[in-house]
Image (cartoon, rainbow, N blue to C red):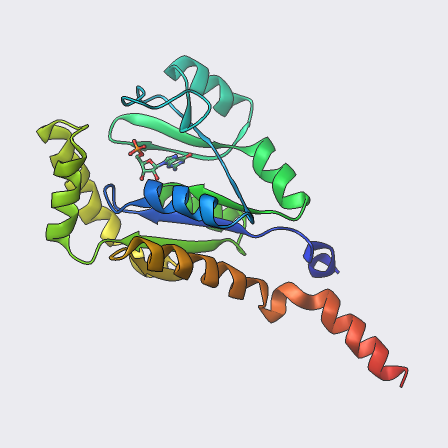
Amino acid sequence: MGNVENVDRGILVVLSGFSGAGKGTIMKRLMEKYDDYALSISVTTRPPREGEQDGREYFFRTRREFEELIAQDALIEYAQYVGNYYGTPKAYVEEQLRSGRDVILEIEIQGALKVKERFPDTLLLFVTPPSARELEERLKMRGTESADTIRERICRAKEEAQGMPGYDHLLVNDDLEECVDMMHQVIRSEHRRVLRNQAFIQKITQELSEL
Ligand code: 5GP
């Protein structure tokens, strides 16, 4: 009866995509537009970018502090990305899912696959710009990274493209509003999956048997 118990739980959603694909902007707009989601804030050892605040974009921690979190099993998953650790704190995600809220993790691909392995009913979404040229332009326009970091991120995108077939849905971020609405629709329809509605099926079957 595990599925019946799970029925009111939120859905764990992972949003991945190439660096520069617009994940941050999509998430910000999604949260403004729809009140349905809890966004997990990750822990990282990378230094804050200009304008980023501890506890808002990330929890910024030292390597030592991060390794302490790993040792305490306080992270659902973690991965190294371009020389820094990134990880998802466990407690918040579990609490939100239990209370019936959908939780979105904006994480890279290694972490996404670990989450899927651990929680197979995770919904994996991958966001990409319409073309590689567009990706390069967006990374340069951002102006927060050195040329070397941009190259590293493009190299990483080449590797990440290999993992795209393992995702459930692809979101092409050409028009921001369309992309955000599409993401919302995909999550809404995930709620309608028969597997996630076992309690309703049992209820109506029972009702029918009593007619
Ligand atoms: P950025 O440095 O641009 O903020 O993030 C770099 C990459 O790390 C992005 O692809 C982002 O989605 C990913 N990331 C952020 N938080 C986490 C996390 O908690 N776990 C994993 N595995 N990746 C993360």
